[in-house]
Length: 117
Image 1 (spheres, rainbow, N blue to C red):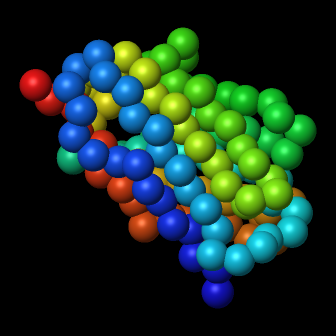
Image 2: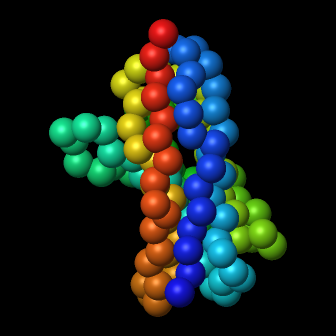
């Protein structure tokens, strides 16, 4: 069974930056989409950003211009650079790897991001 291991979360002041990483525990072939989702207390999980195997990216309106998603296929790793963080970005962030034709759908365990002064 593949595990996705996230790192990089923590406590940061408003306006600060964090970089999240998510790596697979072993090599995975044919990852179609890599993505980041988040869930704040009392709210549903929502898409933050995703990136396709071809490099196309999609962002939630709330993070456009502040967050950047990237991937390293050789390392089976996806990154999320988060700049100009706001208190409303506080949530548990989850990574997701989706295979072609949904052959697999892996989720990380989540990493807490807290933006507070």
